[in-house]
Image (cartoon, rainbow, N blue to C red; front, side):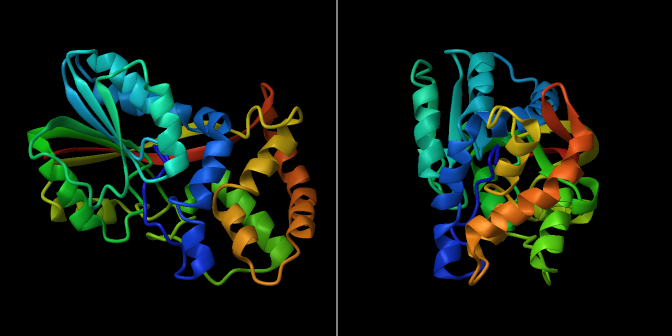
Length: 298
């Protein structure tokens, strides 16, 4: 997330750690960067408009991923400003550096934003498209980020609401459970693969106020998200490939013990095709999503 910056481990196993944002998960996202950007662009359009970055400002982009939102921020602030992209995944950070090479006022800091050393009061605003939800200990992480903002600095964040509001994840998870059997608990919270840690309004407020932010305002937004655009000629197959590789189902397939992974993906694909076919339009599978647009002040 953008592409979520988060903990380097999964559920505590060595395989889980290797699958984290600092390892295979970041690499998988990077491999499908264009499809992920198409999926998340509707969120960017809303959130960037609300942030309304001005020329000369200094902005942090938390979980910058391949720098799509960072590019927009860099162009908005111009050479008189500065943008700091924070990204945990080495693969995504490398992509970000390459894309920002002709904008020297945009820098990429690779590492965990929870522990990055930020110059005090060195930024005017903090932005994140889905990069806020994966911290193992979010209150001190956001206190660290707040220290890098000027007093009264603006904050605009995106975070998903409940899984039930988000068919882009809910449908793949339902299908996976019909194929592999029920799962006692899909990762939520800070675990990699669970993007719904901030699903509750009260959770978001507690984290941000606990970290010292004020004027917290939270508004839900509904979007239509193209899933897997450009991965394959057939839009349904493209969406199946993406959901079986990145996200909760991809993580389950990768970590399920004693699973024949090619057979598992084939069974998942067969069950997914009839579920996704009704959602094809304009050359892609479009599934609904709901996210919080979160505003605050340092």
